[in-house]
Image 1: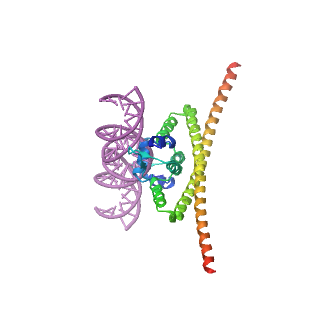
Image 2: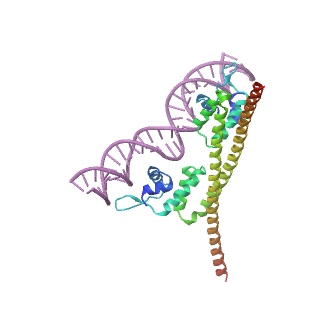
Image 3: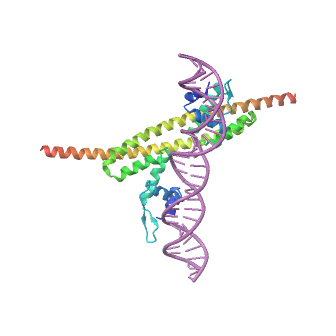
Length: 132
Length: 132
DNA sequence: CTAGGGGTTCGAGCGCAGTCTAAGTCAAGC
DNA sequence: GCTTGACTTAGACTGCGCTCGAACCCCTAG
């Protein structure tokens, strides 16, 4: 798979994928005869994973640490598991924060709806009055 | 309340609060005799609100739009309500994304735990063998 | 043989959201 | 009167994560 296709499938741009390779977040890609990057399916799986971690607010530096451990082999499994567990806790906190935000939004929205209702009521009342 | 106290209560720094005022995200603060900013309790309420919006991923530019509408008075209520409803939908999407991430993390963590269990098992087996 | 449409590299630039420095002012306590 | 410490300003700087441009290369189809 060429870089454009991987880009389409992952939702990134070729520029970004090359950038990820430059900084060590993606493994150095194999090349075809023309010197073009040639990806296997695991590349897409890895991009998908880091996409999840990104949406979980993991900074690139931490993903680099994780990727480095991965390259060092299975002995680093416990260290990687510890990182993921720590991140898991943070994700749960984020979810809790977003839920709190959601209820703040709901309260504010309800407030605006109430204002609108009062406004409508006044209009209805004056409409009735002028109809009388 | 002086800026340092507002900073402590809000979790921001005085620098950041002044920055917010500079860009129009905070109203221009009243001053005391010495020319120092003097805040009332509504300042803290506003900071708390924008903190929620920030954690919901709202960019400052959008908060500025909201703040501008607010300054324009009650007639902009419906416009503000529409913004909040749009943001509410995004927050729900974010929560869904984080939940997906959570289950990705759980799967990976379970994978690491399994590896560890297999590793332990091999050790136990060889320990038994050498004990025989 | 040429045009088009991929791809390549290197390096500069950008947008966001702060963050910090320097130089100065002011009020309070010793 | 002097020090201390919190405050003021304007403006430069930082860190993150891309994003883009320029110049070049290579294959394919017409």
